Image 1 (cartoon, rainbow, N blue to C red):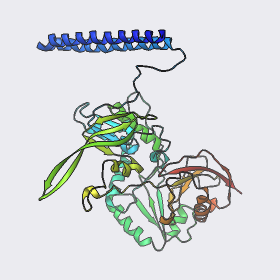
Image 2: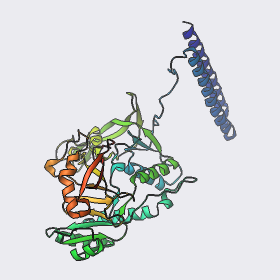
Image 3: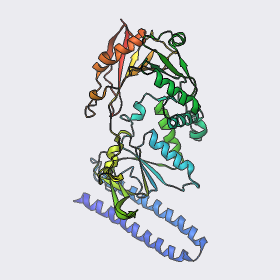
Length: 448
């Protein structure tokens, strides 16, 4: 009983201090309404009030801890990391795309703090994020001009990244950009399409070249050209980089520009509905007013009022759109069309091959679907392959399928690059990174 009397007495001190300080602010604000000079003085008093309030809260916490030394309960501790109650733009997803959007929004604002941006990410460790589990490749060898132009601009941005994403007094950004190019191999059936894509790429300004099997063998002697009718090789602005570094560079720069980072999960939307008539047809239009953000490891959530919501949730973008009712409207209407994004599970295997091609390794894409690239300078490589449509793995099971490598990837890889032929598995690392759209397993292999 004495313990609760101590707490009650401390609480009355806090509330008394709040009431007396509040009366002082109201009276002072009334006196200051007649002039600008007095208004600036009121701002200082407002700051003093919060400083005094925090000091009283601190004293209250110390008394509570002294009264209950064996408990870590804190009666006045607020939930840390709560997002602001209002924002202009809320971005769902803090991967490289979400933080890039946040950066460009702040970059384009006409005045400092002209727009408030909040990025909500449920996993700030990024242990299951598509961004950091990807192969980190960049290329211009596409079939659509739009993709080619976008990639060329991205390559230029990354080449001069410190002109865009440097932060004062922080270390320069080093993406570890390997300009080794992409090498696509085509069979007789795909040669005509490769020539057509090559024409589109050259017309858009991409630096690519076509290689015959003989030229391919001369440039990359370690490649078995059996079955290859034509090859396409990127000469500039292609290769791979460290996606984790790029993500952190965007995040660091955006936060330095005033973007707010929130560790939480978007669980739903509150929106208003109003009718709109166009061309004689009436339809109900929904406008999002609040986004419910749930705090990690808690049932508590914070409603955030916003004007614009950006869906940058990656593989979960379809689910986020469903929360807003997208795809559940009448058929043959925009509201009835779901966002065509769903999770797909993929595996990336890390290989160790001391007798591999080494530095003379581009990002190889075989017409069988197998890909290979170098990983660092220690004789390591990564390889992977997308399964057939009927063999798509269940995304509910995020375990890495090691048999997929041995049965599907390894024979094709060893055929195209004989250096990987006489290898045996000597170790399987238990440290497996899993994600709905990309999984990574570590395999150590050496010559038999």
